[in-house]
Length: 474
Image (cartoon, rainbow, N blue to C red):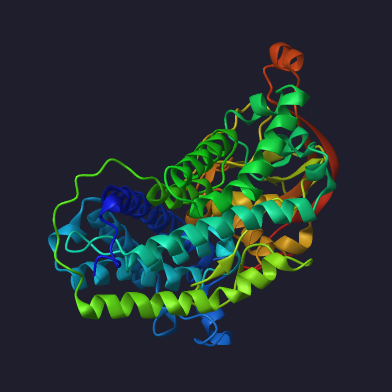
């Protein structure tokens, strides 16, 4: 069945699988290190409470069968172990059917996590990792050549990621059409990186070039993915360069990296493919059947892309097999940040000794240069950006966060860079205030050493304490 396999993409499959395994490893490590405070039994949005009210058909997950923090940790660390094994090439050492099962394990485990993760896991890159991970199950190992139809489906996902993101921009904020969005984006994006200050201060004409290049890469280049080689390779290479530019300019978890990984199998790498037998009939049947199913399900994201009311980052089935993507359909002009502070004073006053909690990634101390964390995902920091946009985004979990700060909860404090209170002396009151942040100018940076300038806007949450004996805030 020479039509079924594409031996010239042997190396392409290998680099794709290595890259995907590495991203799985990061995703499971993120889950293992953060889940207790976020969705654990005593988390801000506990899984047991979620599975009581949401049926399994709406959120298929192992945790509908059983949940405990120990079981979740076991699943997350098992996902790390399998991902590391795949990264080391374990799938090449076992029969084809076993390799497929090996790739199915991290997909099933991560699906279980995402489907109970609630707002902490409501990001487009979660669904993207699952959609790509499901396709990886059917890409085969060294026993067979890469199936042409699966390679096509990977390009189809990449097309929808880029083209959908381009359409949402053109239909959304007018600054994308005027090529001015990047005059604001680097300053107002959810989590700036160490180079974001410098990107923000690029000349305005260069910002316009950036925006125009983005439109070309997302609205024109995706069609070239389906052109003959070497045109398809050139299109993929351009997308990779664009994504690496985005990696340098900010922290977007693994969104940019999974897009890079998706582009890798499009490239026609130099390959010394070993001779292989024809793919077994059962494998051909399974791959074609799954491919037909995914193509049939694709009508939903296609209809969404063509709609004037295009939605971003939405799944059309509970298994996240086919999804729609997009980012920054609108760009903020002003950056607000919620600053959390605590005091040990008996009576909270404006002149009390208020001490600020420091987060790992989100802006806080104006003199602290933003750090690089991506592809690692700081979930609490990201949700704090949404909280600053509107208290409604934070209503399900913000109160629980404050309670845990008042308790000096160790799991919650581990999500932060620093707590201003010793472990045995929690604050008596915690408050939240909203500040406007802006990047300093070159002159201000030289004179003050500060990367940000901030100004108080209003109270976000008044001084709050735990009700006596209740363990609840008041």
